Image (cartoon, rainbow, N blue to C red; front, side):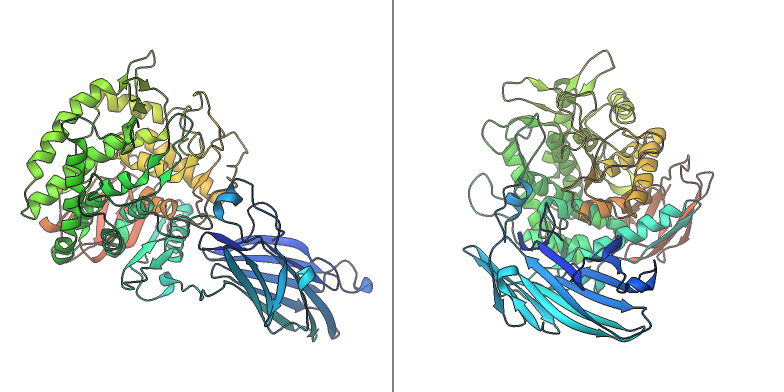
Length: 622
């Protein structure tokens, strides 16, 4: 870490260390490798030649293992034939800047350090941080931010120094996913394409590394949105990831729902029933949107689908009142209108918000009816009225066959740009008996949208662009203006496959699999949406979280879509709708969870599916 750009250790939204440079014998080691060894550990290797007479071969290897809990272990390995005494210096620094200023490039200069115990400490009006070392350094120079040791290395021996970075008053992080209480099943995949196994394994490792316990209720876990920028709870992201990870069990969904139910707003007022969430950028054409709206609409959807996957009756009943409040908020916010508008005055009517609301109404009504509650009929009635209105007001005819509008402005004008948010129109949700809910588009409109998503305008060859390549303002690195976002790509693959557009789904799936190889199968939050060419590779986005919850869960959804698993635990059935074209050849999954029991399934090269392990009494649906 050199103190430039985004480099650093982060904790609680603040960079607690930005510089950590090593000199051995007065020289920087020659870097030979840097890689992510796991979701929470990076390994860096450098070499040194300590004697001019040693020839071209290095005789000291400097290994640095950096852990997400704020620990760095520096180890010197000697291959020299004689004992050595080497001075090792570590130069440290930080600006204690917050994420916002770092992301915008306005972080201040490094702070002055003070000697503190066996290390250094930095202070500013908004916080403090320290680095302690084991063994303690022989010298510490605050003015230079320097710690120094004299290490004796025997022939063939090793010596280590460990640094621990902490904000003051904060203890070490515990990796929940490494414990036996992880809610995620250790599923495996195999098949003709070896990348299937690597992607599923790495995706599960990333999800485990991002698990966090609720401080007030340690039995409940949720996913941090991603490292390093969003290491806390982001309600919409947590719900999206838990939903896509349902093939690994319902435990994560249950914990996430319980945690967010405790944050739900109650009492009088128009926000009663909402799950609070921050605003986020929506690209160049629309104002920032409220993720609280998305989270509120996702809550009953996740509960309804988790019940289908096997969430128990008691847990469902405990969470049902919070889901009812979400659905009551939806009906109250809509009122007599056909659409759910932005909660902020003067906001647009967004296409994706209507898709979220329509799905919440249908799955929420299904949930209420199944649990003997009232209100389902009114939700279905509103959803039924929304469909023809949406098809009329949000569909824009053009010479290419038409497209859905991204939104309607407050004055009624359509916002016509084509972006990845349109994939939510294909994500209609799971009902009983293996059926998917009806969507907002009719059959012809669905086909036209599918063709657009599969065209080079949207399919970069590495995944789905956030904004069409021909749209004004397209930026291949734009967070929501052209970059490939794995979450939307996975939803597109699943939605296209469910609607029968396997060619388009398969192209997007293969593109992401090939991009995943570039990232060692650890999918980042996003990468550049440049068009793929022969011999090219996807360009990393400098501000992307990696690992990140939604992309890791998207890896699970992308692969399990091949088997088309649609459980109905209350009915004791599971329906399979595999991708018949078998785009990756034969593929098999073991250790998935359906109705709380191991579930194994295989799809042949001919697109035929066979269940190899399932819960006792679970029947294969028609």
